[in-house]
Image: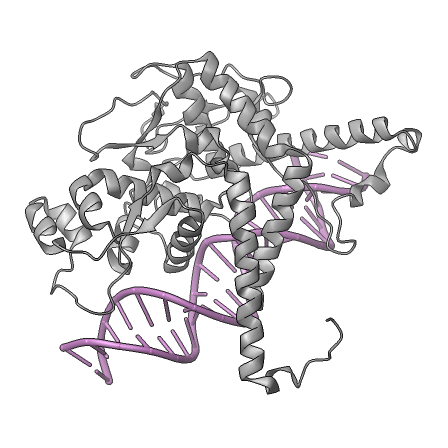
Length: 378
DNA sequence: AGCCGCTTCGCCGATTAAGC
DNA sequence: GCTTAATCGGCGAAGCGGCT
């Protein structure tokens, strides 16, 4: 429980730092610029191959990592592609990694935090002494530092995306004479990965399919309102899966919501319980999904779907369960229209209070819990 | 680009609670 | 005693970022 509080505090801290440096606002602004100057797509189309696990894990769940921006970067690249190109067009990189109009400007990060000093400015002690004293020079140095960190994260993301393996790689980075990576020449792969053929499956903008069997869509606000910047990889993965399900079974979704129990979730997506449970909980708090009303007519809706894959995914094979039912979820597209930064700030602060109250109650009910602890803080 | 200490957060197994 | 959903805490891998 203290762990949940710590995680929540940490997240609030990082959010606050990003607010201080306007990181999310700047990244969203840069994305908005690309959108406005481009084809202004209402939604971004993704091939479902990104989520599908053949065997153990999908490309998506391989990118559910504790550090880094690999998943975020890939989705941003798809957004960028679809602002520039029509369906069927082949993508190639026209953007530098750093500087104006670069990939680095599209991502928001907080920067290096130092636990010992409890500050983000630990690196300031390494600031060249000649800059010291001038507030403006210090500020410029700080900005440069953050730009440098963003660039390193982008490179890191490209490495991670490439090292998903020959078959699964989502980008490919050419090498120089001495085998060093020429990051700026990277090419983007289709959602299904590079493939195992000699010629890579280079990214082309997918054609929207009527059914959501092969593609599904993400509203532009996911990118433009800062959500892509502030959600964790596990939350993004959970949201993507829910979006795909809601579009694959639209009738069932609007009727009774969609749900996913452990076995089919592991089998179809390779997403573990914790990532899913936590992801759903946070997305609920952030207003991106909601609990469906009681699943009336669930059985009818499931039975109406003859597709055996859908049935395997969405139905309980043995019986209709009355008790210990999983949660039924519905997407709330209006939630995305909110400013992600503000929403997270508000909701994480709520959660901080809730967690504190819960801890207080626990102490009141079980005072001996405190006996072992020194009353140092508070 | 590489080394490496440090931070982060998803994984994993244990546990609880529920129905059959 | 067999399920499965949900919760929790400790752990460790991934990879960030300082430094060279």
